[in-house]
Amino acid sequence: ERVMTQSPATLSVSLGEGATLSCKASENINSNLAWYQQKPGQAPRLLIYGAFTRATGIPDRFSASGSGTEFTLTISSLQSEDVGIYYCQQYSYWPPSRTFGQGTRVDIK
Amino acid sequence: QVQLQESGPGLVKPSETLSLTCTVSGASLTSGRYYWSWIRQPAGEGLEWIGRVFTNGSSDLNASLKSRVTLSIETSKNQFSLRLTSVTAADTAIYYCARDRVVAGYFDYWGQGALVTVSS
Image (cartoon, rainbow over all chains, first blue to last red; front, side, top):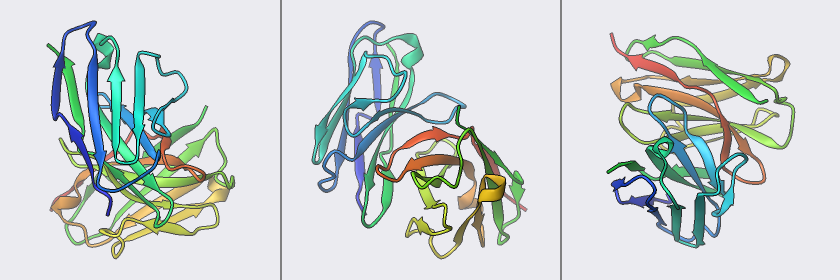
């Protein structure tokens, strides 16, 4: 089973500052990676798919990069509404599986 | 706009069967462009994919739950369902239904989630 490892577990960032989140896959997943944001009491929201493509309506302060086994999500200028937990997720075609990382909590310093 | 809504009992006794239904609006379950997935999240923990069902009723399941999970789809009602047998306290979680693209594997629409507690 592909294992996704996110770091750090918690990231405290000042408003307006940048934040960089990491996600590593246990084996090559090419660009089959998505990022989600989850706010308390809400379902996750898709931010990024295909490793770097923003989903509809996602602000351009969110950007992502990577391929293979190492991926990064960057928030260029943290806003108060960005507080939450961010998950990466790999998707493989065969055998079909979807695996999430354990999440990175982003809060305001 | 695509919307998904989970429904079902919020309390299930140990060793019994958890059953949930997801009703979809704004998209047809007869479309061959999507799978329909279940994902769960224990309180304060991360996300676990349970499995997905296709319009023809075929399904793919997480190996760790495969022996206890059945997924089904009822296109006439635009609903799909989850059955999880022999539940224990470890199955207590928020259960989400979500849309999963056939040509990719990310979840673009999610239900709000249904809390299911396993307790006697």
